[in-house]
Length: 364
Image (cartoon, rainbow, N blue to C red; front, side, top):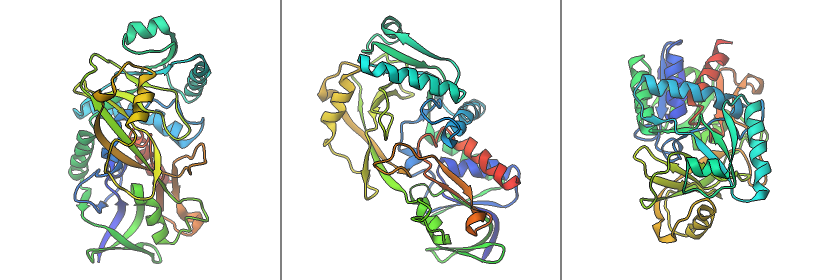
């Protein structure tokens, strides 16, 4: 049996960030990941957007950690040559009924501490993005995009330089609390004894919590998988900013992002699923076209299948909002076991601020 001080389960963007931040302060940090490399699921199957923090309720973890995380992520990208573009975005109203939503988003963002928000009129929209159809828009300067693979690659390099260990193909099959530690067993028959366990298992974080003995139904910690698909086109050129519709109850809508090569990508849609499956077909192409056509002229045959991802939501289909669950579980009888459950968007933006939050918990 191998003894470790801090065991992080899951090597997505958050798990890798935890290893970076914690190995600066603590000895013997180990990250285990069931896949053969880092970030094989949600962290590499998303819009690659750096969010500003305008969408989330005031005083929520999502709001605070997103606003903190924006600056941490930009600073990290600059210091470590991770490709990014602080391009900004427009949240567009395409009819009169949507204008109050822009005002509400602006006010909510300002309450959350987001700077530089401005509602602009049709003429200013056209000046900034001539191809976009909008009667008004919320201009958000702090939004951007970055190369998520390069981000995780750099985090993994720093982790190892700081003597944190990343161990792949290590799938947890049981966790047992002993007197002052946790015995973690893996499907390959390895066994670790850890003083501190941090559950950053993404899509399977609820199952990890259940393994240690937490009643996830009683505490309403069951995850619900929500799939999102993306289309792309090479027919649209010269879009400089990200373009978002007003948000829906479960997603930010089918938005237009411009990748670092300048290509246009649309998505994601959002629908709940019972299995993790990255297959795609054109079932939802008509819905994509109808949504996109509201804010930019496009031909349906321009849209080509791109990619898809699955996010882990605590929010049930009939709920409006659920926050990140980041909790040290002493009150449930599991001291030094920290759960990170429901780390969906803006989890990528917040990866470094989430790690700092966990470090504060450990220091306390």
